[in-house]
Length: 143
Image (cartoon, rainbow, N blue to C red; front, side, top):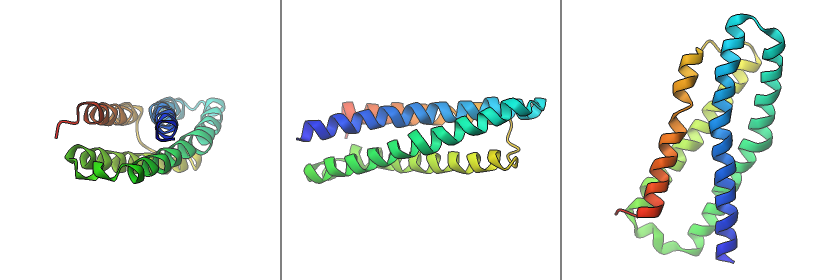
């Protein structure tokens, strides 16, 4: 049973990260379209962003947290390992990033977002750094 839960957790992680990588990239294009006054493109981006955030990204995040919690409940000894504490801290940071994406979603939907496409290009790289750190911690278990 444990391996089934772990496999589902990993599938949810992959899905969540795909969305975490893609949504800010849509924000780059949305900001460019906004700056160019491309109203039809802006309408498409609003729909794509909303569907991605609500239909894929948020359910995936919930699955990651729930399934990860089940894995931790089944293996409470992991709590004594330092690497897990850092990994969980990074997951909490990613949840914050996720909600910040939701805030930008709302701002774009209301035509209130004034962040530049350059800001979103940098913003888009943050989950990559978190993913690398989480993977290294989970695989190497350095401490």
